[in-house]
Amino acid sequence: MRRLSLMTVAACATLMFGTAVHAQAPAPAAAPPPPPPYGEPITLEQAKKVAAAAEAEAKKINVNDAIAIVEPNGQLVYFQKVEGTQYGAVNVALDKANSAALFRRSTMAFEAGLKAGNTYLLQLRGANAVPGGVPIMLNGKLIGGIGISGGNGAEDNQVAMAGAAALK
Image (cartoon, rainbow, N blue to C red; front, side, top):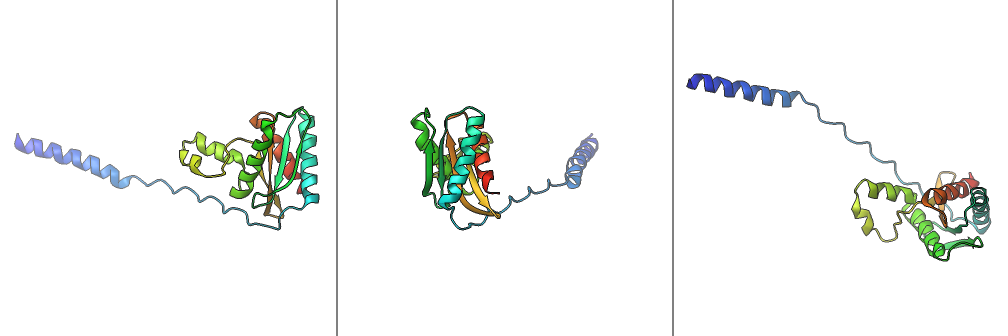
């Protein structure tokens, strides 16, 4: 009886440990691409072009937006507010533009991170997780950020993307 018990334990151990040897470790996740390098800060002329494209998109989808354009360091270069835009949108647009420029990523990236449970993002000073902030790129380099507020998140992001694409 004792011999049967030892053989049973040995067989179970072989099955248990034998399968673990054959299991493969999951492939490591691909490293995220490096953030874009900084370029010369956006000029007033470029900022006006970005804002005009954003305003045109906002009119097309019928939203009243505040539009903020900042340099890579977050300093304001150009701002406009369409008549009828809520007053609270002014600071939100500035916050979104700053977040996009300072962190070199869209505010939607922070929203996605929070949805994935990365609550540490709430501790990043200046990070905004409300869609509508987009980095402004020129020749593969970050030259500023645009922040849009006044519509819902999807509308604000659509308007910001249209503005940022004006320099490509």
